[in-house]
Image (cartoon, rainbow, N blue to C red; front, side, top):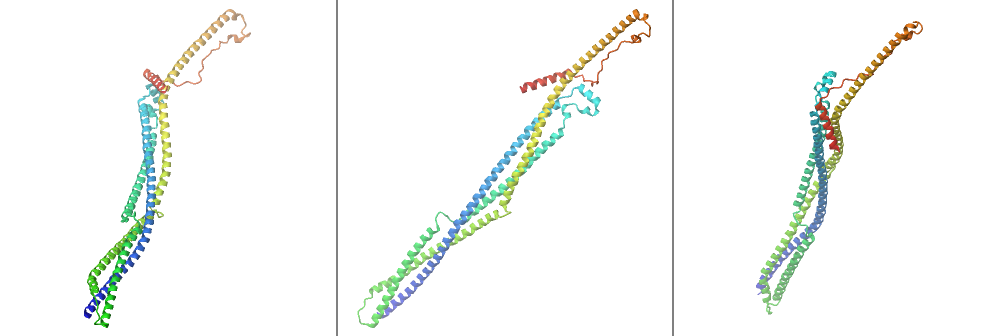
Length: 438
């Protein structure tokens, strides 16, 4: 029996040593897990802080993009309005130019103008008398201003696209960095795993206690037998416990595997959290680079401020150009109407001149008749009474009567003979405009 007890004691000792080693390993893993859990808790707080800061920055960038989009829409609307304004005023000018080109100068006026200035031979229509090139220059200047606004629009569009790409890249980096869900807190995960690990280790401690008790009992039984070899000793219970040692060791190993698995989960989770933290910090670094002095944010702000100033300048210039073009269109319309009134004024003056000429003829004839009557009357008087009077008595009685003349201060220029069709057309044009206005 002694040999059997010694063999059982050796097996128990070895099992106890194995169990102690397994439990020590489990304790080391548990302590390592505690350190990892502490890192997880700290990292979790950092992750939440950095993630929230990243989201705030992304939200700010998105608001900048929306503001930039509003400005772009305003510039696009301005371009559309100004193009429509330029097209409208240009069409009005084209229409009035067409009218001026179709308004031929009356041949009578042309004949007088040609006599006065040979250079006017080419001026056959009202259009020939206007500075058409100046109008084209103003239209080109207005079109160039619109072109500058279009270039500004393209620049803002490029900036908006660049900002959109930056926001998309940062958002993608942020999403890629968050390889874990933040819905469940790190504490919940740590608590669940720690509880399972504690329960498992407590179970292993109980098993180790049973192995220790088995070893102690075998040691006491061996000493008892050695002190009293002939004393009756029942070791059946110890034998049964001995038979359970392999299973107990297997239970310890299975528990150690559980502790190892949990420890590995915690370690992996820690590595994941640290990796997430590093990736989020990279996103934050990119955002801070975007916002650094002289960076993309400053460039965008400068472009928007400069765009506001440029738009104001372009708007002022375009307003001046459109006002001038509109005034020219109105002036040319009045110019065309004034030619019709010119034709009627020439006719009126010509009739007035004809009436004056008739009056001059009448007055001249009347003065001539009065002179002749007075001359004949003096001759009759002299024949009747003059021969009886001495010559020295009244010498002035032999003076002839005074002659009256019509004196015209200035000789008016000869008015042209207008064709009836020109007068008729002028009357029709004035009537049409009067009807349209009323």
